[in-house]
Length: 233
View 1 (cartoon, rainbow, N blue to C red):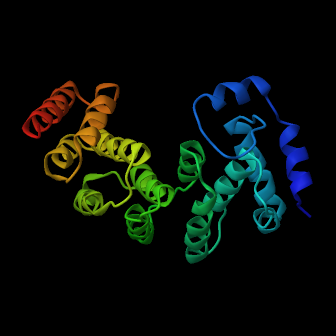
View 2 (cartoon, rainbow, N blue to C red):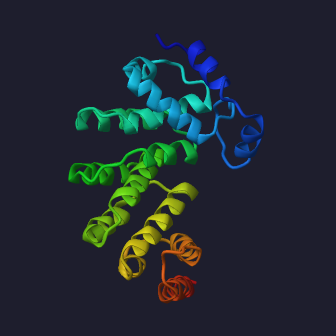
């Protein structure tokens, strides 16, 4: 049986103090940190899923450790179970996210091209809760960034309600990812989606640093961001 003590002991066996201190400078969380690297957490998640004890693990409360939250997110997203159960589990897990890294590691564990996921993540993306919304946006960019989804992505972007740095970063990242998959599609979103100057700036910045985006697109993105910024002054 999994318990809070067993989880702590398991995570402490993989602790890396230097990583804890380094990662702590990049993230902000209410949880206690031990310092376990992501590959080790993914390996632990696979072991827990293979053991068949993953439901028992996910039921353990309270979540006190940052790495416990990470593990719970990875397992919730990657375990094979009925689709509807997975979505409800992710929706419930969002309440335990208070940090971009926990959110994004969870999202990167969700690999699925099912059209139901696209629609469900669109619903997540328009939540007023920052982390539910970011989860929806990041899962979309990880699984549905092709041109065939651009109209739906635009509609989703236009309906986003949550605000702040982590939402702006996710939207800019989404637009850049779309462009990296299909030249011109992300640029189209920059021109037509209802996004702030900050989101345009982030999208242009991310395109500039991407090896998968052409120089032509990088120049266009920078121009769009600058022109729209000046027009709003």
